[in-house]
Length: 296
Length: 310
Image (cartoon, rainbow over all chains, first blue to last red; front, side, top):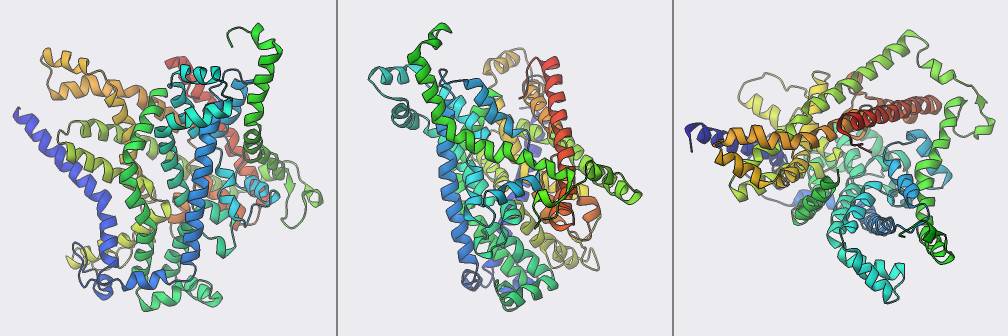
């Protein structure tokens, strides 16, 4: 190794070390601050190691009214929405590989082209209202079922499975749905795992749909609730207002703990599921992206 | 399936119809949420006042489109919004080279566990929502946040710097958060492309005496350029679609002038401002321009690379 190469390596490792720290440290910072003594934390003494360990913040925050309801909404939409999206993507992705389908190309384009336009905010809102989906839990699930990008991913994957498998099953008298359930579903599991993790993360993180379509506080998602908490603690006016309605007791609590401890604790609770699930599934979506990029 | 004449025999017609019926429910679903809303564009030609039905509202023709350019303040506002949209998109495109660089340099790291660690931790921010990114920003950059505490503690500043509640360098801040969230994830696509490069290319170059830097410059980077151009064209096609989440969560009364991109402007006019019809008119114009852009880029791509992007 030449001197130049050695210097390059050292600089390279250092650069990536720094970038990684910048990406990871904020999460670490939030976690250690939520389990440290609140007065130390409020004065900025907790930067590297937790001090004065306690779990009081979590006990208080988990007791917040609204939080458990929002958690139920978020979990329910994530499970239901992901299941529907994965099923629909697999089903449509498979059927679009069937060359015999009546005007297959046309219908495939009919789906795919929707990735590239949208009617806009107000027409969408009016549509949801017409369909009685505003202020309904189903607004989180039904409009998200069809995702053209996932359909493309699954279709590309299924095309790589040997056709002879299906032909053999059909000779044995299997119908199209039997082929789908018995042969395609088991064979397409890697790509379905990819789609599942994408869909689940999107569902869990979604915030705009609550903002636009939902005013009923019982249907707030965790992300939206977090947003209201952040703003509550940051502006006094919002605090007074929400204290008046009494529906979200975050403001009351914020005066006992510190506003920033509440904010951070809720943030950590919202981000924890992703922190746990994500490294386990990482290898799946790296594979999934590769499949996608081979096509593109 | 082999020949067209076979498609006309009754049995395969039945089968092809049956396949179609299998997807029919999903076609309806797709129609409902993607095509049916387009009908809402006619609201742009009425003076729509929500509790009333559309039939009870006045038909105003092109009024809203004209209002957009009617007076100086309105024109000024539109120009500011377009400036913001262009600035954010251009900065986004300018920084789109970074994920490629990230992948190229990460590929040079031999140590397996370090590489995996970097990849895992840098893609993590992509999987949290903008609300959480804002929450992180708040924890670090607010008056009593970590950065201010640090700077105060070391006597570098006298009073807390207002990072979030100010309008200084808004474009740069937004681009930075975008990078923080997307850099590692954006690199995955390129890492996948690098994995697909034929190793023989490297071996042959090494035999010819190429060093590490020459390998990067002459093999890795050229092999990644096609991927880069596809993504570049897609981002040009999406020039007007900055999305709204990021700007919505970061917006406040201080930075509103510079953070309001087109998508956010539509929201602010439609949902919190006065006129649903005006907002519809703006988003309609935006969609038309976007589709035109997409088709143009697609055409250019076909001509220059011989490959369409859609």
